[in-house]
Image (cartoon, rainbow, N blue to C red; front, side):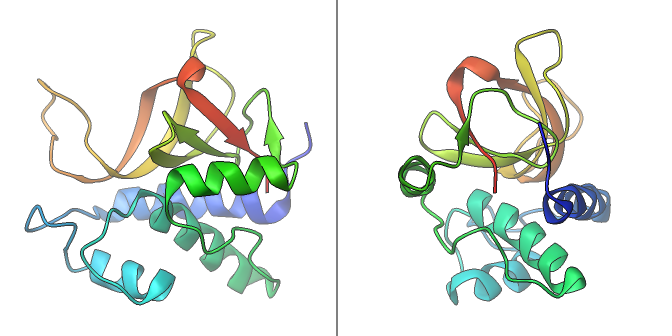
Length: 156
């Protein structure tokens, strides 16, 4: 399993963005930092932004490395999944820096190997930590609750 340098750097950027505390402020897919990320992706505000966040991390990594971003400007998770299958980018086991699509409708970045054999450690945008936890606002979170069986994994 060989990860590209840009994917590894994208993970570091994703962790940094999670520490920065990117949160929705209105519940309408908007917020101070989101209004920076969303237009950079496709010029639109107030849309679902999970795939935009993953793209953003790869875009920042690509800019630092002065290379073309390998993440296509496809922000509908199911369309990203279709593109990956067509381009033969789908892999069976996730690794650090792989992008995943969960249930054909949510995108995130895997940050390592499977935990407990069935959950993907990740950084995800446009998500929440979960019911009963102290942080439940939509935002960018480090997670370990994404089931492996519900995902398609994409290696860029």
